[in-house]
Image 1 (cartoon, one colour):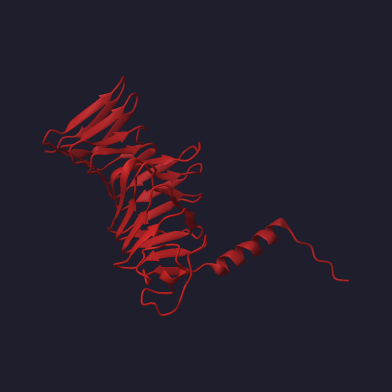
Image 2 (tube, one colour):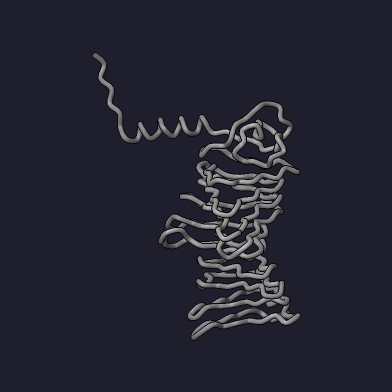
Length: 271
């Protein structure tokens, strides 16, 4: 009789192989013209609708094709996203990205976190995550969230994050951080709230009446410029915001609020 010994590592490797083998990329075209993420008729193996696909699973990449509008009306989880059209994460729903194979998510269109009493959310699970592209992730209320859930997890951003929302953490992980290499724009009435440590060379903007760009955690190393037009930069008590970049714009009634003791904002003056 041949004796077989299974080790924990072997079992894990086998399970990982199965999960990886089943991973796929599915493309949302809005074939049925109902904008429904949860309608399998809307998913294909490419944007040309060459072959039928299926609703993406937890190991899959979800692509929203150019010109398509997709509504997520119930919470779901995928590996990563590529948005060339519009993805609306509706109030009360969460799209979780587990980044299982360390793929970047690409946003060349729009991801809208919607608000109406409850809030749309993007949850980044377990792994570090990167948003690349020329598009926008926009929030409708500070209750809308982009969340990190793991110790030392890093979100690196090169897209535009705009509107009113919070970049925050779920639970109590330590060492979470946000690297801004793109643009953070408080460009609508409401608060764009930075609740994790931040760094990077990207832009920070408050550029609408009653728009607030708020820091609740001291950044580690900012090198990007600040643009304040109409809006407000708010630094909470005990928080030190310092950038080696310029305060490039400060006009049209813009304000800086140092809210409480030991709050500070340091910047370079443009020559």
